[in-house]
Image (cartoon, rainbow, N blue to C red; front, side, top):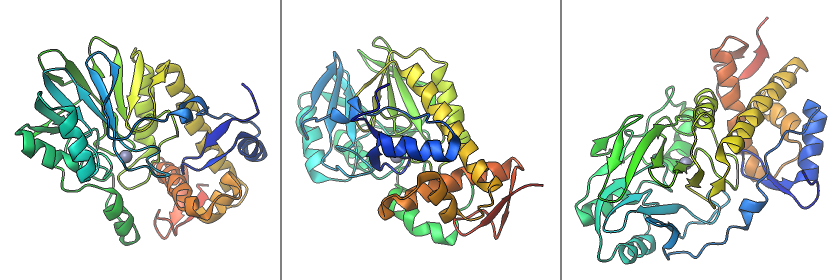
Length: 336
Ligand SMILES: [Zn+2]
């Protein structure tokens, strides 16, 4: 692996140079196991114009670029005559019009959400109503544990609590049209209701926000769970999908090997957090400082949520105790 001009991304989606990253990792953990996003960050798609990804699969990028959505949300159109729309995207009239243009002359028969974040599912209601098509999803937004008072505002900003699918799907269910079929793969972790969709014939897996090529995924309690997230990575690593089509960014080749690296990276991050507790750190801000070093203050909040996700996992397994409850303000220490 080359050490120059490589870009790396924190769970907080902050881009930092690999040198800085590996120095931080070396200082904290004695090794530098990281994930390479360099090539995928070249992705520069047209916005609002559907492009062919494979025969029978088109990608339409929404006009919502940001540090958390990269170039924007990928909406996928599956099939040729009677089509499915995967992740209609944010509630944005420009994107609704772009979908209209992309499906002109075709019949929309299914509107599917991979999960209920505001950049993926809100437009589902309007698109489904316009084409009189049912919505599909694992279920409404839900939490692993009740939300704490100081989490409400953030959750309100990021979650689409109005999505309630007409058709509730489960792991292994098939959704099919005339010239396409999708199999549901439940992958909780980023959200409890996150699904991937395996496209029969091409070997594509629509991976939503569970696996992306440009960044690691934010896993934030109480709707996200690192325990579930890593288990879902292991589940994908055991499949033989040929490539992934993520919710943000370009397609991913050799996905099983990539997913195994992601899982190893997450496990190592957990070990590094335990090491900071062994070294005497007790609070999330101090652990973030030790693990991530000096990072952009705008991103330290997301880094803190990732650390909280691990700590909640450790508390759940009895490895760590939390005074004042396992929230962002908790005081943590290793169980004796
Ligand atoms: Zn998401």
